[in-house]
Length: 296
Length: 318
Image 1 (cartoon, each protein chain N blue to C red):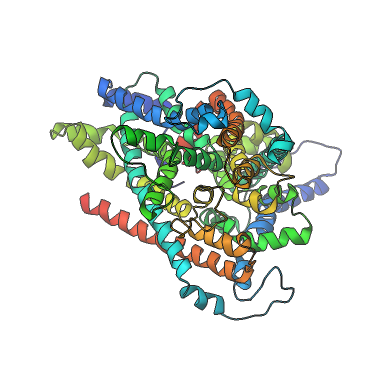
Image 2 (cartoon, helix red, strand yellow):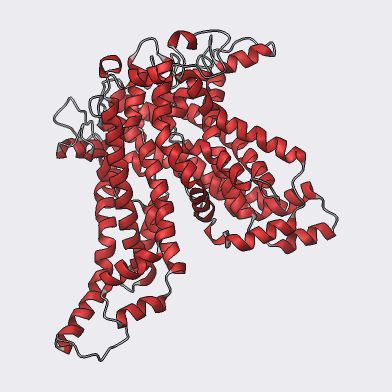
């Protein structure tokens, strides 16, 4: 967030780099390849463990290559008689929660971001300072009253309890506001008004199309955050109606002797959707992080 | 908004103007309302209400709660489990953050060269960030297993005896720090990289004229210029690190329950909060709320301290 003013357009940056440094030497590549191996290895390892029987996982020395048991383990994972958790439902719940939260965060952030960036109203500065302040307040520490609140609403054990508190984020509003200040010319807003657009239509027809790039980034990051969220869903949901993270942790915590082939199959399956998204859209995610110093 | 239009429309002009004024007056508030309402109900109110609950003996099992003043706080100050959790949290934070940010700086520096497959390297570095905390915790817990784990096997290859990672204080801290580092180093590296690319070319040229080679340019130009970004990452990792929960909570998944090992050797503050809240069936909401407020306070103070320390080091060098 503080580093936003230091980001500069990508094209210029590329030239600067090209001029600044000589081409990377073999040692540089060696170092980077080691870093890459370190990044990938734990994920590879989860695949190795997930593709063996549990007996093979408790072998020494450990097996270093994937085995042929992955589909059998996935089959076990989705068998509620074995894992005491409805994993298919967990995946569906996570998909619903993450999608609703993402759409809501992007929409309301754009709405408020537009107001803070381009509209004139009394108290604008003060309200925006309030948004900034909440960026640094660890709000999730209000989880005890939030739990009481959810109990009061009768939302415990219901995914509503996971969706509702995440419908807006201060970070989203901040990101949108910063983007709209630069990306939507005030003349364009004025021109739309001259053409008879009211504020809502200006938002819908002028601002929304213009914020598409940053909306994609914010959406991706929100989806990832929501999919990976653990503590709060763990507090309000149970094993019969979990999100995917709660389900995986439940498989791990229930057994007295952990069945790691099953547990890491759960991990592997829970990572796959995000991995797919990352491989498809990683470039945008990186662009977003580098532009906005984003806490994912 | 000041622009007036004379086009003839079906709506009488005065009414139209009135609507317009209403729109420009009211719409901004309507646009920011959803954020503030939802945030108020689910963010701000609970945080403030935590303060109130912390002054009561509220308990899930006990329908009537009483105002007991600062009793929870005075009890907390004399609670050795709490201070143990504080020590663990700070220990793990230190072990994970300092090497993490140093390594991130180096990686960013290396990525900031003319590279083939630049996007590939950036994506690979960021990959751990996509992985959920639950998966990180469980995968690494398996890797750190005593008898069959990968880490001990590798150590065995170079003649080091198997380590009971969960059992010792320092060893459990190291294992948990590795998990945190793995997930966050690449992210911080990309933040630094973004800031590095914004450093004006002239500074490097001037340093080169003064005879500074690449390493000295890094120390005397890059690092000082990154000061605001370093402060930012330190503060972010302070806020995140002091709330560490998932990794230690799932470190020994079959025996945990939030105590952080048999000797509470790696119980963090949020784990202790959880233990008092729901984990050990004590349901001491009042006491847990006091822990929450102390944590907020600790985060605030510690973030400020870090801000001052990092600021001083940099300005001393510059």
